[in-house]
Image (cartoon, rainbow, N blue to C red):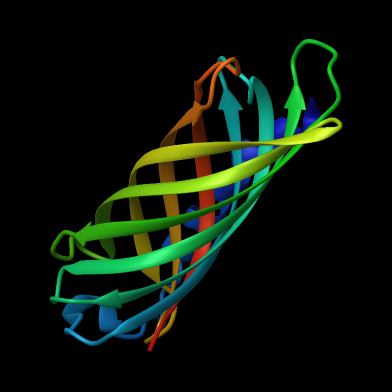
Length: 183
């Protein structure tokens, strides 16, 4: 129980500590250009309300994207998730791959906000067999540059899981803390 509270407070502490830095460099985030590449990763915690993935989960996500305009990024991601089932079943391990589109706002002070849509597919190890699923993801977040090319980001993400029958579909709400490197 204490680990869940720590994982929920960690993004807030990280964002506050980065926001309080008095010596900010002028970030590239103020002027993204077409052709910029973003490499990133995040840690997250989610509560999956119903269905096969019902329970709390921790995940690790890696992603890479390419800016097609100064405000739109297209990319792909890999997600590894450890789900603690609510109802006494064994824990689940899931791996998924997704493609996404991310739209950035203009800079608001030291922060830049974004919205992201993604679709993907994956597999969850459910005991003796693995089960395939599809995903649809909606995410909103903000980032702050801590150097000219590195930013920390905080995001809230809703993921919808679609399983082949008879496995029940479900969804999960996650909070993610990540780091991105802009090349």
